[in-house]
Each structure stands twice: as structure tokens, then as C-alpha cells.
Amino acid sequence: MAGVDKKIACSIKRREESKSKQSLQQNQASSALEYDELGSSSETEAQSSSSSSTSSLAISPVVSSSKRKRATLKVITPELSSTLDRTGISHRSALRIVSATAASLGHDPMELVLNYETVRTSRATHRSGIAKEIKENFQPSEVLTVHWDGKIMPDEQGASVDRIAILVSGINTEKLLGVPKLLSGTGQAIATAVSAALEEWDISENVSALSFDTTASNTGHLSGACVILEQKLGRRLLHLACRHHILELVAEKAYVECMGPSSGPDITLFSRFKQKWKDISQDDYSPLSDLPPSLYEKRDDLICCWKHHLVKHQPRDDYRELLELAIRCLDGALPKFSLRWPGALHRARWMAKLIYAMKILLFANQFQLTARETLGLKRFTFFVLEVYVSAWFTASVPSSAPANDLRLLQDLSEYHDVKISRTCLTVFGRHLWCLSEGLVGLALFDPQVNATMKRNIVRAIFEREATEDSPKRAALPATSSLPTKQLSDFASRGSNFLFESLKMKTSFLSKEPDTWSDDEDFKTGVAVVGVLRVINDTAERGIALIQAFNSKITKSEDQRQHLLQVVEEQRRSQPGTSKQDLTSKKRKQ
Image 1 (cartoon, rainbow, N blue to C red):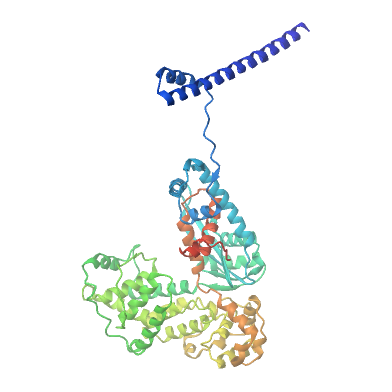
Image 2 (cartoon, rainbow, N blue to C red):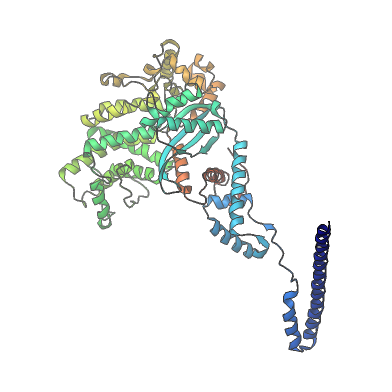
């Protein structure tokens, strides 16, 4: 017991000593403060006694000096965070910009909650919150098309990784779902990623169609992504193969037929022309001569058609350049025509083949060509002008797709260069998606198809038996029968699948085509068909977005996906830089 009492006594003594010490420090601080105030007063009145100042300075460390107040004004708002994300500004750059902007508006940056870590965490928090809100508020249309496209790009460690951009479109709808990584580029991996994205956004039941490039991993009969995705969703879907991708294959085959295969990544002829360009007088060019009779007969109509396309908005500069070069090759007049510096010439860039071929022939008097090169370029360019350009610029219209495909088949079969005709017919004949039983019904909504043909299509839908298994692609008809083939020859009872998939009422089919324009069900069908996308530019926009932000702002995969959502939403809600755009908070889906 004595030992315990001794411990208690020691504890009490330590507490008393601690209290005594604290009391002494407080008294010293109070005395120092009074002395400091007295010294300051004397210095103000008479500028006296430097010893007072010295004494004050000597004692001042003992004083508990007043600390600067903790900054409380937060400046990284959700709107500011979104804007910084959209413009791809790093955290350090954002810190500098926000600090300088605050100062220019009369704020003391020291009063702002502003440092690197605060900027980083605030942006991440806002980004996640906005992405969550976007998903919760997404209101999809009843009928959706899911688009996807893949790209190999570097990951955080610098290794190459497959990514797939997944989007959906519909009436008043275009939405990025995500751009996840793939373990491989197989059809199984693609279908799994697309299915997971649809489930995550809870829109699997809205999907009626698939939009994709015609690669083997997508279109394989057994292991393609389209087939596997249908199995995962438990129903058949419309297959909208990208018509531009199909036409790229046609152009590639035509070029190889005329010029031979390339042995390297670049095309030697185009490299020579690009190097020579600086020495070429751009005002001294000559339209093509010795046109084939069939091309000469179509010349005026083609120029008129291309000028009509020029008036429309073209999404890419090389599309406009292709039209302008085609018009000048046939000696058509343009109010303003300037030649662009020859661009990328990698053989994978199919558009380069068309543009380079035309430019080289326009300047053939200033650029040395062999006889073989001249002949090959002329064969290829004549084909591009007579058949290809018009097909390319009408490919995006869904209701016209069946008629355009049939017209292209007939043009290819009748083309005067037999080797080009045979080669291109073979490759195009593998991709008659829009002439399948399931899609040929799109022609019923084509204003260019006459009432008689529409009547024949309807009759076939009611009377002709569907082909077994309803293939997604039509078989290539015998070449001899192509000139007389009609759209109604491809229709059958299986064509009802189009209306079922798009959830369309078909009461108008029992009426005369001349009266359809007054039918409400037909008007609804026109609206639904009008937003179908038979080219896959939608997915390409998703790829362009991830390429722009793949290595910016964050290394977190979750944050990267949130970043893409925020940037897409910012671009949609603030498309321009007017005050009205910049102050708009309306979110459209």
C-alpha cells in the first residue's frame, strides 16, 4: 500500500508542477505583450530608444503570435472542373490559371483553398459526381443502335492495349457508354465488353440494331461479336454494317488491281509526288483528257451532283477536297479552289489513294511518270470518278441504302474495265447487308423509290416465303441477271423483321403508297428509319475522344472513364463559345 501511495503522490506533484509552469508562461506572455504595446506607442510618438525595440524583439518569440487565418473560399466548382477537363488542362496548369484569374478579379489567392492536392482531389470528386449524374439522368429513346469500334493505343505503362469505344444512338440520342480496355481483340471479348456496357447503363432492352465495321472479329459466322452479342441479349438484331468501311474495301481492291500491291507502309509513287510538291506550280494544272465515253456522257450530271454535296456540311476536310478534285478533274468550274499540301500517304489511309491519284494526274505535265504508272493512275481515277465518288457521298442515307447498293452492283457489273469490274464485284458482293431480307424494307421509306416499286416490295413481303435462317447478307446474284434485278426481288416475309425490330406499326402497308405521306404510322416510321446510322462515324467519334484524352489529366482507369463522360457532356451542352453557350447549364441526352 505504501508503494501505491507514493505513486499517487508523485502523480499529484507532476500535475502541480505542470500547472505552475503553464501559469508562469502565461504571465510572461502577458508582460511581453504589454511591453510590446508600450514600445510600439513610444516609437510612434517620439521615435525613441532603439533599446525598447530591441527588447521587444528579443522577447517577441515568447509571444504566441497571431497566425494567418485558414483559407476557406473554395474555387474549384463542378462547372470549373468540367471546363478544365474539357480543355485538357493539367492540375499544375489549372493551379496557375485559377490563381492568376482570381488575382485579376481582385481576390487574394492566399484566401483561396488552392493548392495542387486540393485541385486534384476536387476535380476527381466533381468528375465522379458529374459522371454519376449523367448516367442517372440518361433517358434513352425506345429504339437504340449500339455502335462500337476498336483501337490499339498505349496504356499508363506505355504498353499497347486494345480499347473499344461503345456508343448508342436513336431519336434525339447519341451517348458514349465507355471506352474500356479489352483483354484481346476477339469477337468474344468485344461482345462481352459491349454487353457489359449495355447492362451497366440498363439499356439492353432498348437495343434493336448493331453498327460495326466489317472485320472478321465482328462478322464471323460462329465467333463474331455480332453473333455472340445476339446470344447474350437473347434475340435477333438488325445488322448495320458500316457502308463506308465496305466502300473502303472496294477502293483498296480497285487500286491494287490498277497499280499493284505496295511492298511497304508508304506508297513510293505518292512519296515522290509529296517531295516534288514544293517545286510544282499550283496554277499550272490540266483537267483529265481522253475520258472513257461512258464517263464523258455522265460528266455534267456528276459535276452537278458533286457541287450539291459541296454545299452540304462535310465532316472532314478530305471529303471536301475529294469533291473539289473530282470536279476539277472533269474540268468543272469552282468559285474558289485551292490545292492543299499532300497529306499522310500511309497505305492504310484509303482516302489518300483517291486524292493523290487525282492530284498527280492534274499535274502530270510537271511530274514525271512511267507509262505503266500513267496507265494505272488513269484506270483507277476513271473508276473513282465514274462510279465511286457518288456512291461514297450517298452511303450515309439509311432509307436509300438498298437502292444505292443495287445501283452500285449494276454499275460495277456494267463497268467497261472488265478487270476492275470483276474485282470490285467480288469484294462488294460479300457485303450486301442492306439488300438482305431484313433491311431491304428500308427502301419503303426512300422518297426516290417510286410507288410502283414500293407496291411490289409490299407484295413480296406479304406473299414470298422467307429464306431459311434469314441470312444477314444477301447472296450476290448471277452477273447476267444484275441489270434486270429490282429491289422487290430481295424482299420476302422475312422483311417484317425490320418493322418488328424497330417497333413500328405497319398499318400503312395495306394502303396505296401514294397515300402513305398522310399516314401517322408511316410518319413515325420515317422518323425512326431516318436516325438509323448505316455508317459508323458515331463510334469513330468515340475513338477520337479517347485518343485526345488517353494520356491526359489522370492515370486512374475509373477517372479516365468519368473524364470521357464529362468531356462529352460539356461538348454537348456548350457547343460554342458565345456567352449563351458558356452560361448554359442545360444537359441534353
